[in-house]
Image 1 (cartoon, rainbow, N blue to C red):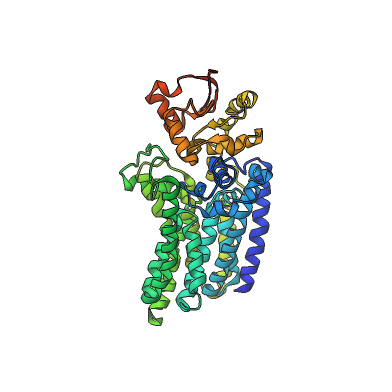
Image 2 (cartoon, rainbow, N blue to C red):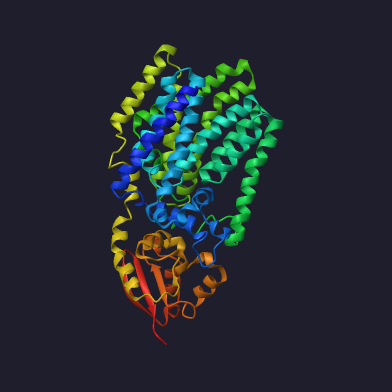
Amino acid sequence: MIIAARITIVLALVLGTAAALHYAQLDLTLSHYDARGHLMVARRVFDNMMPGWIQLGAVWLPLPHVLNALPAQWDWSYRTGATGVVFSILPLSIGLSALAGYLAERTQSVLLAVAIPLVVLLNPNVLYLQSTPMTEPLLFGLSFLALVMVDRWIVRPDASLHATGVVLVLLMLTRYEGWLITGALMGFAMLAHPRQAVRLAVYPAAALVGFLFLSYGSTGHWFVASGFFEATNPALGKPLLAWEQIVQAATSLSDSNLMRIGTLGGLGVLATAFVARREGRAAVVRGLLPLALLAAVALPLYAFSSGHPVRVRYMVSLVVALTVLSACALRWLPARLRGAGAVAFLGVMVWTIPPLDPEAPMVREAQWERPYAEARRVVTAALAERWDGTPIMASMGSLGHYMQQMSHAGFDLRDFLHEGNGDIWKAAEIAPAPYVRWILIEESAEGGDVLAQHARASARFLAGFTRVAEGGGVALYERHPR
């Protein structure tokens, strides 16, 4: 078990770092707008007109931004995303190592225990994500660690209570899929040890309550569930169509073979639990635990049926779960064939889905915004030439990624008036002229941002302002001299 874990973490760190350097050379580290957005949230905790913890509150959960809050104040790190990448590679490697140890114990095969984590890592979509400051790699790593810790907690509920609880807290504060996976793990924990599970549930419950208070303190709402996307998905109100979109996207991220083997693995988990029923309830629950990873699929199902546009990265977690479940299918091979079967499975996956495939769906999706980023250079140049150092009004919810890009032209986040500036922002939303000379408006994406909506609703909103530049869907306005 220890050997498998050690081999896996070394391979994950080496391969992950090599991939990150590869994508950095291709200038793809920050090509995804959310990669820039996550850096911006981490940076704004200190670099802001109104710095402080309140800047963590938004649609996103806080842990990734807390981790990177201090490193992001280093200009080089903020502009390149380097430390954000470290916080992707490192936790994923640790999680894969924990998964390897877990599989070695369950299958008694070191080869299988190393091969399955490598199948996860070498999927080109996962490999790209861990080469960016995106938050999915942290989710995957903590999900594997939580699976392993809950498995240990079932065996010794008192000895591992605190450590397991802390991991669940971290998972809860990373991404919303973590809420679903944690909920599934806690459901299994309740089945294994109902009374002790109540004590364990205190940890994720505290994380949830803490986030709700953070959300209310920073946004005035206990939970922000709307207003950050335009409901354009034809699956709106049609969960069956949403499910078809999920299956189609997940298949494009892997291939049909992985989908089939992963599904067989899910059936294998049920069969394993059935066989273990004579060993007691705890043994049955331990056999079922890997199914908890599938709970993440509920998020895109809800999002797409609520009209959220399809984003393939939401299904990467499903591909990861099916890959882990494939180990459960391979476990049913004779003991002497498990290792060879796992190595063959790894070889087929790497052959059919090349790890650095430039046409991988996640790599392509990450480049959707690149033409707009290039076109916005005109706006940046115009502002840099005319700027007098006074605040620039812009919606961080829509243009946060652009603000990060503008750091290369010497603009700091404290130069912007945005939603995180409380009452000043609210007053400027009504009448910007008394507060700012410059306004940046996103006019096209998602139907336009909140400032675009104000401008369309009332001609008086931009009274006294002149449009001086535009590009990539963004327009720059300057107030006339008085």
